[in-house]
Length: 305
Image (cartoon, rainbow, N blue to C red; front, side, top):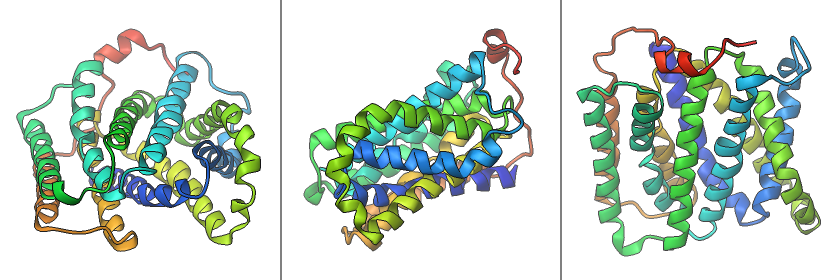
C-alpha cells in the first residue's frame, strides 16, 4: 500500500507541474494544437508496449471506458484547464483545483458505491479548509477572471471523472495498453480541432524552448503520470486516491510561486498545512488492504477480454 500511495502522490505532483507548463504553452500556442501534439507524441512513445499482445483496440465495455477517459480526462480536462489558464493565474488555478479531492470522494460514493469513513470525510474537510484559507488570503490580488475560474472548475469535474473511470479499469486491462489507446482516442477527437490551427501555430513551433516544453508535457502528463496513477489505482479505492489529488494543486501553486513569480502569503501557508493534514488523516495509521472489485461494478461490467 505505501508504494501505491507514493505512485498516486507522484502522479498528481507531475500533473500539478503541468499546470504551470500548460500556462506557458497556452500563451504561445492554440490549445487544440498543444493537446494534439502531446497525444501523438505520447502514443508514439507507448506504441511498442501498447500494441502488445494485439494491435487491435479493446472491445466492449473496455473500449467504452477508454473513450470516456480520453474525452473526460484528456480532451475536456485539458481544454478547460488550458483555456482557463489564459485568463487565470496558475496559483489561483491551484486554489480551484483543490476542490478535486472532495469531488472525487463524492463521485466515488455516488457512482462506485464506496463507503466513505469518517476519517476520509474529515480529510476532505481539511482539504476544503485549505482552499478556503488560500481563497480568503488571496482575495485582494487574485490574478484571474470569473470565467477563467469557471473553466478550471469544469476541468476539476472532468479530472474527477477520469479518476473514477480509471478505478473501474485498473485491475481489468493492462495499464500500458489502456493508456496507449486513451492517447490514440484523444488524438482522434482532437484532430478536427487542431488541423485548422496548425498553420497559425507553425512559427511558434520553431522555438527550441517551446518544443522542449511540449516534449515534457507529453512525456510527463500523458505517459509517466498515467503509468504511476494506474499502478496506484490497482491497490487503492477511488475515495482514498481522491485525497492524493491534493498534490496536484499544491505542486501547481508552489511552481507558480517559483517559476511565474506569483505572490505568497500567510494564508497560502496555512492552506498548504491543512492540505498536508488531510493526507495524514487519510493515510495514517495506514492499514495494508487490497482494494477488491466492488459489487456494483460486477453487476454492470462483463469480464474483460
